[in-house]
Image (cartoon, rainbow, N blue to C red; front, side):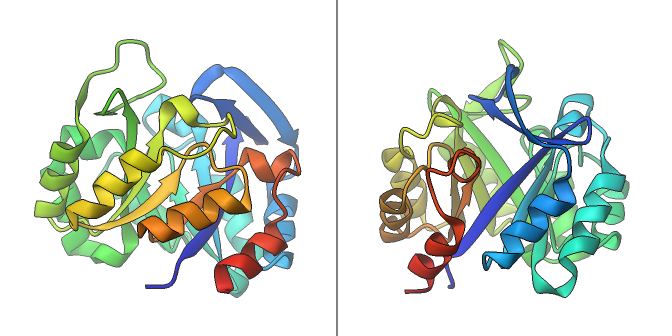
Length: 244
């Protein structure tokens, strides 16, 4: 399996932002033209772009479909987009895929209704459905930004979703997200070792050494965000490192 490098574009009110620990109160704005950012990522060699509608995630329905569509149009056939945020119904997922998303990411709904995710896998194929597992204190949380959000042991959640056909999981260590302090290698290694699906690492990745570490663990890919926007990590160099 080819290791996938996914630079992230997180959207809020049409702008490119990054949060710390998934906290909407700790937002940093990095740009007003998401499509231009996507073009820069593609020019640096990105084959995938991870696009998150943060407003949609918070509202429970997509809020930035037009912006996402512009990003998809901008990258054209040069890169594929993995789209997340507010995709909680069969209709919302179908609309995102029809609009050009190569894959969609299901988060909160996956924990609440694994059977629905199984239906999405049957309709669209496992290659187009990714489940997001946002983890704090070893619990996979729905609406992880909300204080007191309910959770389920992450191993148990992953197993239940693998049982309905999910083959790819984006795993975020919430307490490391946006801090550039390194990924949670223990968590990622444990989930890789389960052998129940491909694991995409997210949260804390800030260097080439971090990318090598998650690759060596057996992760199928990595989502990188703040490190790119703060110039801690050069995307073109990261692409070359992954290719090597």
